[in-house]
Length: 93
Image (cartoon, rainbow, N blue to C red; front, side, top):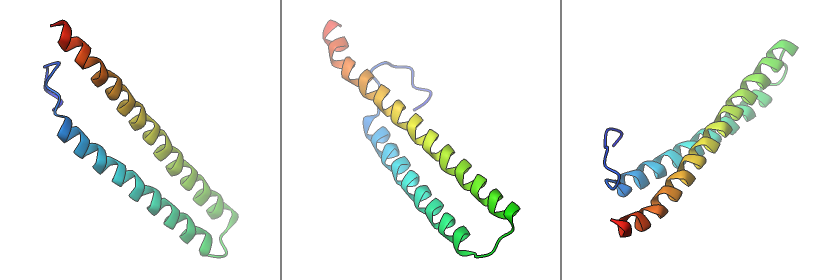
């Protein structure tokens, strides 16, 4: 797919399938992060350094997932815009 150079060669079915897989993966990662956060908080007594480290790791992972999700959403929106312009391009040719 990445090597395709044709403007009209849009494997929509494959893209939709991959989009669905990525969305499910993002949901699974969110669920695992929540589980991990619960596990960290349920461990009871931790040193201040350990608690701070756990919080920083969780914030970093959650932030990275949020940024990745936003980038993925922007890419999907851009693809939608480009695809919506295809019919008008095809009429011209």
